[in-house]
Image (cartoon, rainbow, N blue to C red; front, side, top):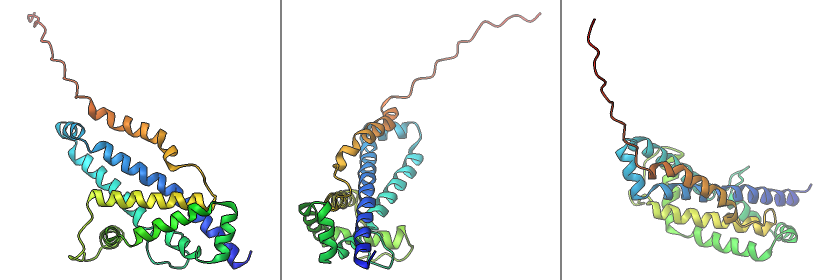
Length: 214
């Protein structure tokens, strides 16, 4: 296998992994949003489970943040993230080979979305927090505000869309990501359902008649 054919396989591999990441990204958002509603929060706090819920929430957010931010760093040897794929797609031979099995329109759409999000200021904040607080520990630049939930979710959804279009464009997977979420959504609903039910009241103990001592 020559070098450029190897690059074709790298893009295919990145496309497959990215599609899997896209599913997990959307699952994480669904899980976080489904649990962040007033009745669930109130019931969690009423049952004194707030600390546990907080720890679960920040763990889910950290995982989501990492999945999104790791798609955008500068390319180093051996990297298999989105930026590597789009760099390789600049080669006409690599692109031509992929278009034989995929869809040129989806590849073009993936590149369009990639350029748009790469220039999004919200991505700077997402990557900065990843670099200085999540993956590494360093001093945060006070000029770069931390992303809020809505900003992180917006960048995450856009990243998942890029991953989906790249997978379609390269032909490795043609199923819409949304179709892969039907079962997870039911599972997520079941996960939070317990907190939508008020805690049952404890039955009062009935005091029996004391028997006289012999």
